Image 1 (spheres, rainbow over the protein chains, first blue to last red):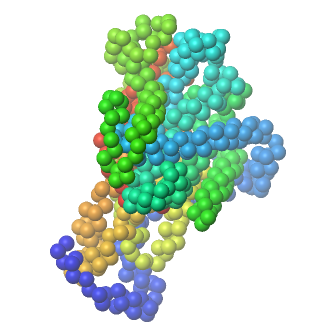
Image 2 (image 1 turned 90 degrees about the horizontal axis):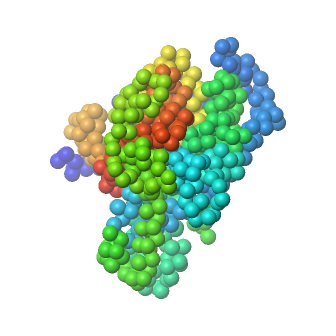
Image 3 (image 1 turned 30 degrees about the vertical axis):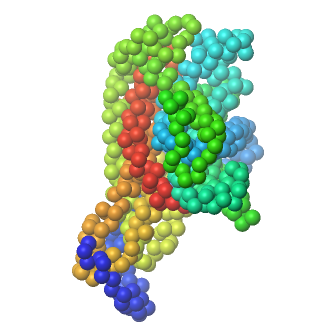
Length: 317
Length: 294
């Protein structure tokens, strides 16, 4: 490490002039160590991520039941999905409803909380308390929420609402078609708020204090300070958080399947991933299920791209 | 606790605010914190409730006479299965630990040349890896299942471990960390005749170790809590992990068995919370450092 203080200025130039003359093969040979370093990761990454993505596109254009080899059917799976599958529409509707409520609400709440925490002492303690729910297992905590939502008078929520006279008889929160999804949304917001929260906290701590001081001298109000300094400074984190929130909320499955059962009452908590799981691993219609996966991917991809655009353009204003 | 906090002025910030504003902020944060922790407190309280208190009407939030009987009942709560709950805990701990170690080794190794070497194909490889960050896990699930099925790994630890190492988040984080290391440092080591391996172990490794804490904790938590992978990759009870076991418990849940179910939740969530508390100080630091470029 002691030798690092000596910086040989000539080296980059020497390397550059050599580089022009060398053939690609010689360069590959020269960098053999680099390839050796990335090979273990690339091997697993190729087999379990790159090939599967391509394979999923291919499978979505076939009929494949895992017994016979895949049969090419062209766009048939997609046509069936969009024109014939009522349940898919329900799954899409539920997932969108779920995402539109929990996504923005969780995002805004976690931004506000992060901003408030940044203003006070005991940051670490508050951060911990607000973050803990999002590192708990969704399935495991769902069991506790089911107990809270219990449909009999023993359920804590029913008991309190009965006592306060808000409801007249116990509500079957997780069986009733109207209340199931909203009940799960509450759990989900509680559980997923921390995902972008931690990123916001880190970003807020990185905003230089001098900026706030300058704003104070200029007589900026709290709101102006938030809008013109804080938000632009943490823009990368805002973007990251928004995309994460969308991706996560579109993939809702484990808490719906635990809390509402599978299938849920009249499919009232049926989601896109639930639909995928049903076709892939219960009916073994791998081609059709792959088409569902591809649609989910496209929806997620388009939404996060649109979000990126929306959030980046604000900066230029 | 909160009364003390409210009087505390904010010394940390250079810009002083009016105290009433501070009080309002503390009040909001504290009420929010209480609401956020209620389900956790309820879980812990229920896990130690004796059967008589579970059947009590009106239901009580907190336990009066705590008992550890729920934890010993846990095996019975699983009903038809003979698998003891400790087996699920072992499976979760074993799989998560191996995935953490594997992710650290693979992504640190791969991140070094991607950050510092200009080898042919580097940009292409890196672009592929970054695009993979955008792809949701469910797209790859079906082909991954088919690959695992063809290798005969269904219902083995391999099925739970190897595909979990194919994520690109770890590599991305490590690359962010290696990039700021000055090139001159590496070049002068090269001038002194150090091999690439030596540069890696003597210069890169000591400098990226802080990032390992963050990478470990997020990898550990996501593997421990993963529900979908074990759901499709395992068949027998003895290969199940905690989230799957909890799903089985939740299926035929009655009030009488709620104590054992809460004990199961306790054993599933508390280890993760403890790991997080232990590593917390590294996490926010690393995130500030690496800049989290969206």
